[in-house]
Image (cartoon, rainbow, N blue to C red; front, side):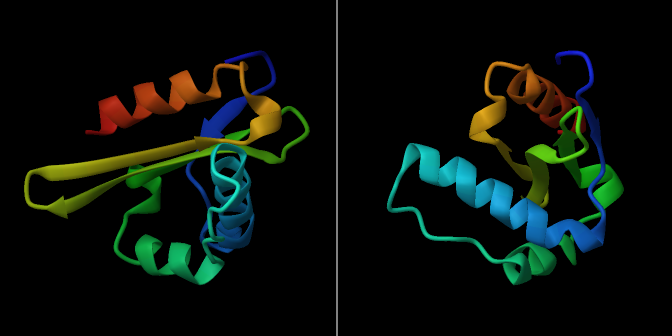
Length: 105
């Protein structure tokens, strides 16, 4: 990742910011994508260990620039999902989150 960017586990209080980031990333690829709500993230996060199963990427100004999670959908079967906020494409966030997802899996 470019200098000044970093990754960390999300805090439970960041569901609103993560939902906005994911919505922005999805809409950049599909203008008809519906918004995911903070409540949806809170529901998923309630069954995850956020410190182990999710990461946010932060921009140099501290805002959220990316998000990824790895979720065990059934024993031995994992699902990874990741997003980069459009204004931060090309900074290495996607590659870092893919690497983290692979390591987590």
